[in-house]
Image 1 (tube, rainbow, N blue to C red):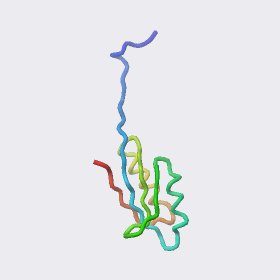
Image 2 (image 1 turned 90 degrees about the vertical axis):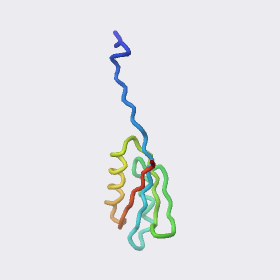
Image 3 (image 1 turned 135 degrees about the vertical axis):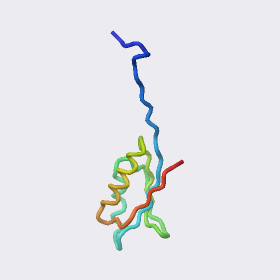
Image 4 (image 1 turned 180 degrees about the vertical axis):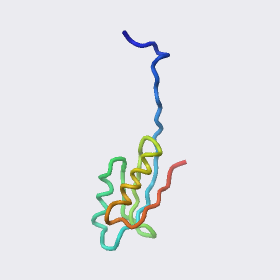
Length: 87
């Protein structure tokens, strides 16, 4: 027997897009491609400027953004991260 529609609870989870700006340790640019292997990171590039790498994130929920930024920060070749979240 199926439940009436009024009894079915649906939860809408909004996708969150973010960018993580990454400073790498000296001589570790080859390791940066490991960042793209983290689930939720959809793309990433080595860049010139104040930061060395930019990772693009698309995940269900704001909490996941923080978890991914923490995973990136804990990689041994990462010096610093800054996270920008889409408005």
